[in-house]
Length: 524
Image (cartoon, rainbow, N blue to C red):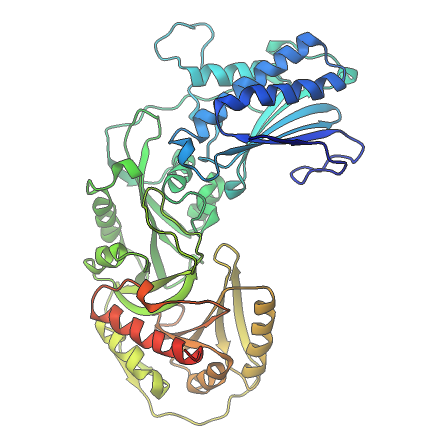
């Protein structure tokens, strides 16, 4: 269904002057919407003095642009997408009339469209997608594609208003376009070749992430090619891809990465492991895991870890066979919106919890720790599981000294705050209380607090945090200290233990102990 209106105020995407005319429309991502969009564009162009011949060319450009969008962004069962809607804006933005098509399907850029050669119209390598993009560029004065990640892609077509000068000729149109035309796509090599990520892979990786997660993946950078490349260049991301050639022309069918928040972190996360839905079950994920496991042997970091989702046991089983064992349970870590496309039966109203599963990359020396006695049964067995020897020291009853120093990072994609206590001072309780009040007012769902078990003040810090509602989560080695105690605060989150899938006695013990503390805190 289409909803057409003419409000008196400016639209959100690119506010024009209030005196200028604009129209907005939402239509299904389907060819049957083309006629509706053409009628809207023609009506607006008529009010601006475009001639019938000019309006005919504009309608043709709109048709070719919509066909290009549908082929690039909705080529994998568009009717199955919850967001298979196109948002249309026709605005007078002097000196141009602009048609903007916004979609929320697969990420793309025009390099994905095969090049069309008008000198060889009957060539076997030509296809309809290339022709549509070619005609779109010829029939406008300016055009561009903007990739905004989860906010969708914008295709913008612009024509000079009649008072600004007549429409340019097709040759001049093409030269004035922001994009001189689609670039050829290099043919993919032999199927299923594993190799490091290259610059040209970034847009294909963004599309693969969408095919696997929709737009629910917790790291929005993985949907924007430029941000993927930036993370690789500054040392936060090391990626491998599985390359294969398919009929759709998208060669990347698998991906896995080593990730960090900062390039100097002593631990790294194995994540963003995805396989295209039509390639699952063929052992491709196992090949990717083998590749990253071999790479870890040459890495300088002390530990590797994975956030193993608990909605299903697959991740725990897969990484458990590689030596990753759970040392902490982070409750309500992922938004309820996180879903795997093509995997049914996942609907849930509660946030998803994850096991922090760790593997030491080299033997760790014994660590003297100041462990709160009531947390010993939670922490010590899990440290022993991964080969880390923690040696509890006699408790010191010294009062906390100085001013508290916190390192805070709020992740909007997770709607969670991560707090590292760099120094627990005498005012720790007051500082945490003020911070919690602020985050609760902002409706942050979860707060995770990290304490250094080598610090003699950690037991006193735990005594400050526990009355405020913090629960133990477990041990998170090298995040950032070798022996890091993780606490968690849940802001009005209702959780059920039976929704946590566990594999092995360590995960079972963690779940039982953490949920015992949760039930006690919630008076359940």
